[in-house]
Image (cartoon, rainbow, N blue to C red; front, side, top):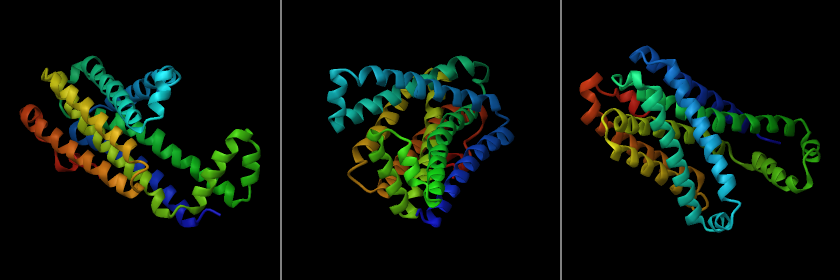
Length: 273
């Protein structure tokens, strides 16, 4: 049986993610009159560059002998995965801001709405929907349908599914709280990176674009390296600390380049808790 407390945490996590994303979107819309279309552009850019183009590259690269070498070395895997995410997502961010949001270059808060869309759709697709799947499995396990579920998958996949079921039943409720915390860190990071890339575009500071790639690469690589070396709560704290550090960098960039255009970033936008 999956404990009721674990199910409650999963439900709470799903609600938290949707409230976070929709709340930020409405806040930027109402407070700064940014456009909902900017949110949608951010979301679409993430889907195209991270979930389509980047994944196509992985399919090509990881099936080669070089790909096998990468997958068998955690350091190479961390560097490869981090660079891929950094280059694809920040390039997508750059192109969207340069061409699709060109008319709003005099409105710096557009960067915050874009970052909410980019990080928000990632939170929904990878966080909320993932927890929703676990929630469905949990209800079915508690209804006595575990063996029925196992019988419907190929034999080679049954062991992995059984492991997932065991984790659902044995993990403490606190472990399920890691997903919404991770998504909070990711949304925070994406908003901060959006400020850096926005400044790179509108102020013609390409060094900030490369800084965004570097920071994105670093946090993703760090997560891969530490995944099996520290506990999940410790890993999430480290990633959150990195995200907050990136916010401070973005805030300094905002004050230097964008403050004179349309005011300062309110404190609530630094860490969208």
